[in-house]
Length: 263
Image (tube, rainbow, N blue to C red; front, side, top):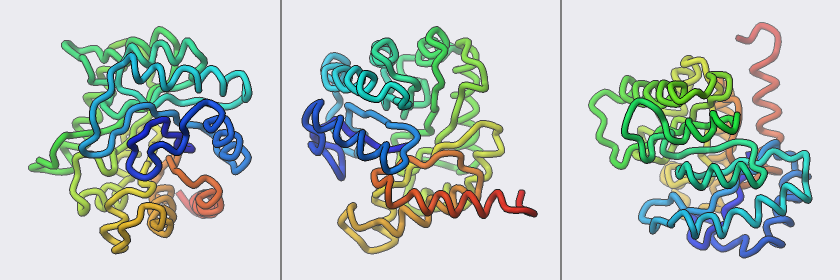
């Protein structure tokens, strides 16, 4: 999954795609490098980022979705949003799946996930990420898995079949650096829930903390190692900024996982 941030304030590449033409060029390059999915985000989720209203998010997002759908009709387009109304319009414009950093919980008042309702109506796959505002865990793994199960139940209660659901453990979202490392080290616990797992560690601050590297663009070794370890633990897709750099790592890790005698 190649990351395409259509924002002015994302943590490592804000403002890099200032318009439709720039987004088309970046998408073409990522697809040529081997991206299977393009993930379009129009609101930054970095710590301290200002919230963006649905109208502004759609103004950034929809022209790019429409242009990509026309230029690359066979590509798989993901929309990184937690707002059901934004997801509905993006799907209508040509998006294929939704990547929800709020786990489908935004605007929920009952047992059904509002994002699940949108995706069920559109027959659209949904990725449910784990997120907390604070790293306030008393019992880390039971709480992580319990939160993910609650998100999955709410999405299925909304009518979304389980085969259209993915999980994401939420590396970098409401966890300490040590907890982020624990997420990747024991990612098999998330895979054991029985849903495909997306892992997104690319350029994040925990990698800089471990490697003593303040520049997000120089955290490539951290990207590589976490991707390989995640695949070994059962991860099904890696979300990255640098598709060309990570592609051989993914191929090698996947070959090792699938080699004779491996689980």
